[in-house]
Amino acid sequence: MSDFTPLRSVLYMPSSNARALEKAKTIDCDALILDLEDAVAPDAKADAREAACAAAASGEYGRRTLTIRVNSIGTEWHDADLAAAAQAGPDGIVVPKVGSVEEVQALVAAMEAAGAPDHTKLWAMIETPDGILDTRAIARASDRLTVFVLGTNDIVKELYAEHVPGRWNILPSLHQVLLAARAAGVEVVDGVYNDVKDTEGFLAECDQGRRMGFDGKTLIHPGQVEGANSAFSPSDAAIEDAEGLIAAFEEAGSGVATYNGRMVEQLHVDTARRTLAIAEAIRALEA
Image 1: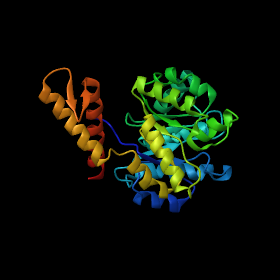
Image 2: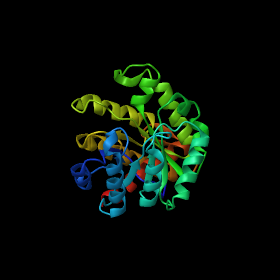
Image 3: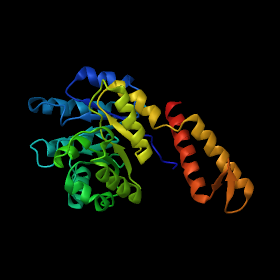
Image 4: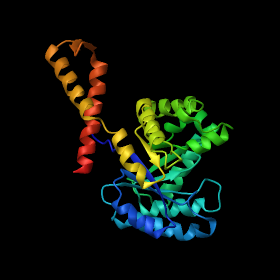
């Protein structure tokens, strides 16, 4: 995991709001999504595009992974958004409602035609039935696609479902995206939690997402950053356990060891090493 980049907290910021873009320089999130889509009114789209691209090219956001979310494929703003974002060269371009391999290939071709540098990756939002059902193929459609972002509000809408505690009604959809991402080596970020005043519910959903296997969570308010960072960071106890497990396995010198009464095999060691790699990447990020 030498090239692992923590994405514990991925904060949406409206690009039409100059004060929000300035404030984002001081927020302790791992990544920013400078939004041109839902958070921006139609008559502000062009100005927001210019502001987001200027921010992405400014170099003023420090260690944060900086991305731009463009408007959806087929909208009147999409082509101009994608071309401008590609030329600005952020870490990623976030595209809503990606639903097929063909769309990924067309997006990548458009990015490259506009001059996107190699470091500018495609982040695909998975938030439609087509996207979920074709996630495995989508994940393998291009090496430039490196992150899936769950659009859970749209998933609920498209399924005619309801928002419920524990999200039991959309768990199959979330798991399908997770399976596809892990099979292809793509990072995957959970959807937003809508009630910014419900700290208990938010933290519970962060914990659920971490236990499911998500790399982090998208956020709609700076007040959610600290909770997400904590939830998706290995705890001191987890780090200590991982170190002890690896040491016990190496000391045993065989294919099986015992640590704190538990049987330890290579698969457990692999998990422990991933925990330590994540912790090291977070320490490096925050140094």
